[in-house]
Length: 614
Image 1 (cartoon, helix red, strand yellow):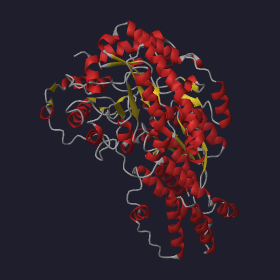
Image 2 (cartoon, one colour; image 1 turned 90 degrees about the vertical axis):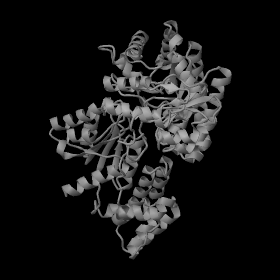
Image 3 (cartoon, one colour; image 1 turned 60 degrees about the vertical axis):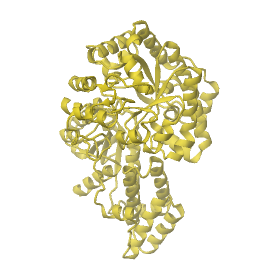
Image 4 (cartoon, one colour; image 1 turned 135 degrees about the vertical axis):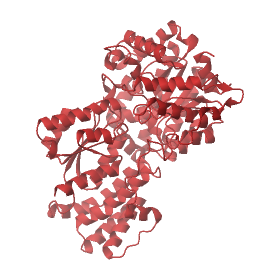
């Protein structure tokens, strides 16, 4: 089989491929193969981009060649401010419609052109035409990523603004998504006219760790159904569906969209579970761990994880190996080769893969499994209050404990009336405002945060819990101000995503939890430069600095921030922490700072650091 025949046989589930197909995601990582070429240069130079991608595919292999690099083209086409970076995907630095007025002004005056906002859509179309002219469609599939409707919608407004709109102004949220859909349609139309074989619709904002299923069905699915219908019926092409992290509640919803022939992404809580649930209905692509395995482990460990996927997911076809998400600029060459060469070595016979021939894989685990290296320990493990709340065992022994337990329950239930009632009762019983905040309200937020980490609550639930807590603050604020800083932890914490990063949900949750615990938070947003972290911390007499890192190549900006603080002699003045998908203990330890795996951990780091200083 040619690569093209191999991958389409797997994607369409029409027949067994000859070997495990592989999509190594040679997009930004491909640019590194041309000495001296950087991503920002290649994104503006079709000749350079084509040369880099063709060289990378010839060098490493793989069954596709990918035009484009990311999901930002729809939002960039309608005016988003972008920062092109040397060793990473572009970064969104300015939302085009942060207010309703901005949105209606744009919608009512917008005229689509592939050259809007710098012409990157036009450059991707030319990239596609070059691959066709150079004969790649004879041997490989030519595909391209496009941001999906609801992901584009939240990039237009900002994620926090859009989440609020979904809950408080749903008609407006749907208008934004409808407009985003029309832009997506225009872009995929241009790509198919240029000669692309298929588009991969990237819609990570509909992930189930952000939206509960009922909100996905209301706000995201209608536009997705229409987009895939348009691609299939009006354009005559196939489309794939990519999303991230926890998506089990909507696997069947995604698989049932007419025109969608493949689902790809992380597949938490496990691609083997997805195979059993929907693998008979639709092909699956993924989900080698892009950071913990492909970036940080050895070629042997990459090989074993690929084999485990083949044994658990690809044994009877309908499967394509791919990293769960875009791969980093710094992925080692030997690990890329291990992924691609291992796929080539796993052959299909008439009955599928000879699984026993792959060897003993009993100690190898897929991403999502509790024993996989990427699985994080819960930071609230063993916390008596959290465990009691989960088990329904909140049993107050004193009047004060009754108040705190009722406040925890009110936060968990999003009960505005109860939180006001029990805050007032607490003050009447002589409790301090600090105790009510830190032993009642913030404990409730911790429980909800823990439930989010367990995939039992969603980002929207975290926002509801925070708004419930906010109802108590007008009652408590005069008491807090009258008592000064009190005995509880207080101070200003500067938070932001480092340069090159735009996925801000995790950072937003950390900000939310810190605020819920009494801290003033200065949220610097996305794409923050090291010198700006330092400047804002100094200007606001901050006690802490938090840096979120979502791509491995951006971890250098954590190093740089720490270096700047040391050069100025103020490194020890701050409690400094880092977290995010590509942050880890090793990055933190080499800089002498703290690593936090989730929002509850961020609170503990600041709180413990301040208590230690006192």
